[in-house]
Amino acid sequence: MQAQDGELLQAVTQALQQDLRYEQIRQQAKAYAIDSEDPISQLETSIFQHLLTSGGATFISNTAYAATEQLQQSYQAVPCIGPASVEALDSCGKDRHLHLRGLPADSLQKAKQAWQKLLVERLYYLQAKLDLPLVQPRKCKAGVQQDTPGGSTEPASVRIADREQPYLAHVPLLQDSHLFGVADWYSLVTTLLNSHWDTISSAATQTLEAVNKANPTTRQELGSDWMSWGWLQGFFQGLRAQHRQVGLDDMLHAWFQQSSIQTGEACLEAGVIPRCRSALQTGAPPALRPRLWAAALALHLPQASVETRFQGLCSQVEECHLLTDLLIEQDLETVANSEHFFLFEESLRAVLLAVSRDSELGASCCHKPFPTLLARTEAGNTRGPYPPSGLLPCRGLVEYAAPLCYLFADQASCAVLFCSMYARFWCRLHTIDDTAGKHATLISLCVLFLHLLEESEGEVAQHLRGLGCPPLHLALPWIMTAFAGHLAVGEVLLLWDRILGFDSLLPLPLLAVAVVAFRRQVLLSAESKEQVMSIMEDLSQLKTVPLIQGILFGR
Image 1 (cartoon, rainbow, N blue to C red):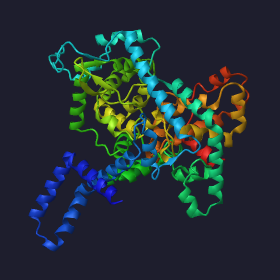
Image 2 (image 1 turned 90 degrees about the vertical axis):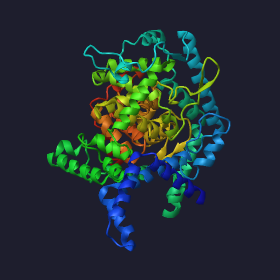
Image 3 (image 1 turned 60 degrees about the vertical axis):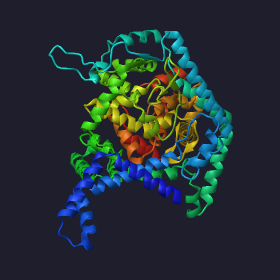
Image 4 (image 1 turned 90 degrees about the horizontal axis):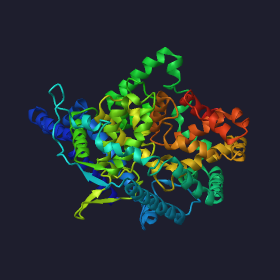
């Protein structure tokens, strides 16, 4: 315990020292102490009051809160690939996170190794297919400013956003090739679950029975009833009908729109991370959403240092081309054809290319979803992870970034927000492990969906399987994209409000069950897999909040 306290103190101190505002606050406190006429015995109290009124205390408190969370995540953030992965997972996360029971460790290990092999093989296949190096230095010098017709110089972010870059001409050669997508994850997850579903289901049943029989104290210690409706109703207390919701009540009552804005502004004025997250549990007013999200993630947007760093990453894009840049461009084609996002195509190109060069992203992820690939120069020297961010672009990666363009006009803020969201949430959707409960990763989210669907809509689940359309075949694309590209943009943002507010991906399987339940009658009337897919193809008219409330509290 003392060792962990020491680590925490060191982490908080380091986080403070790395932020320029800490030095400013320290100097202001020093100047206040010098000018103060208070007696020495009262000086400590008066300095503290000064920090409270100036906002310095809130900054220090939020920094400590964020550093504590990151340290707790680091106990669990172990490599997904490698001979010691499972042992490290067991030793690091057991006391802090729930784990899915009934899924053997050796099966997880084999799945991770198979996943690593698949990614490496596909990367080299793409390299051979395109006859391009993984890293290709640019012939012209990076950082050379190009004059625009008006005589001004263009920033690097504008240059890399250009769709007509010569290197991108290779994209059509990819055809339908990619590193991985939803279909690959579906194959992996279903193989794992089908092989061990009996033991997983049996373990869940035994745990729920034990929890139901236990007294409240023992029940809390067991903590593994996370798949029960009772646990979920308690966890999502903020979604109960007595709590007014943005995304429902603001459309019914004009007065609530103003009330929600006042509540949000009060949270922003206080600036405390837990309070901002609590406000997001009932949804954010659109006008305050960018600031509330940033506050909940301990980000300070926009600011000059963020823009400077972003332009530096864009300059790195210009220094050399990566084969993975072509995969990003291929993914952007879905945005170019989208009525909601085509206007943001150039911004998203700059954001995703810059993010791929951000070496801090991989280290900040609460899970390590990908194997570490090391790039080498022609001389054989190691030049760091490939790509520098450690994030191998998947099909659908742009779906995580596109909705953020509705929050921030500047690309730098979008990039920072994307990195923070990926590191905290979306990396869990690309991770092979058995973390369950509040911090559940993809496999546990899928198990929760199947378990809840069987309990609430067993007839529909059985009918879908009889048509050769397993329920997970419908739900996995929704879960893996966090419903981006499936729901209307406004509804996606309302859903992501709750993900941030509850600091969990559990709303995803809940909403997936709710969607199936909502279309129960028409699904039961379907006579083929094709009819089912047609019925579930368009979710753009569905409303997030009433669906989740209904499946949680309306049963």
